[in-house]
Image (cartoon, rainbow, N blue to C red; front, side, top):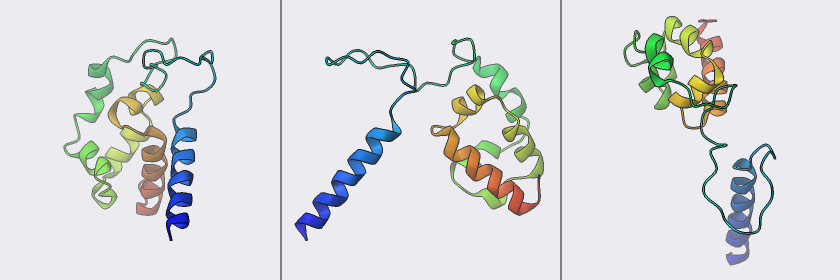
Length: 116
């Protein structure tokens, strides 16, 4: 039983460590440095996005982001789907912590609900 739990914990550690790796644009260093900004939402030119411009369209729909964050995808409207799915990647990353998971789930939910 302990061997099974140890195997599960080891597998989780491996999966988590793989999921937080960056794209390889940082040099490898044995010493731990300051936290990298590679995981922060960034625009194409490397600057952080302006939150007010990212939230301008999203604020027009009440409870849109809250419904997606809480995975209450049946409450997502067509307008919410269209606005969120056409947001730039950096703005989407500003709104949601793990942007690729939320984008995939939102895209699937919007197709199932017939919004796109």
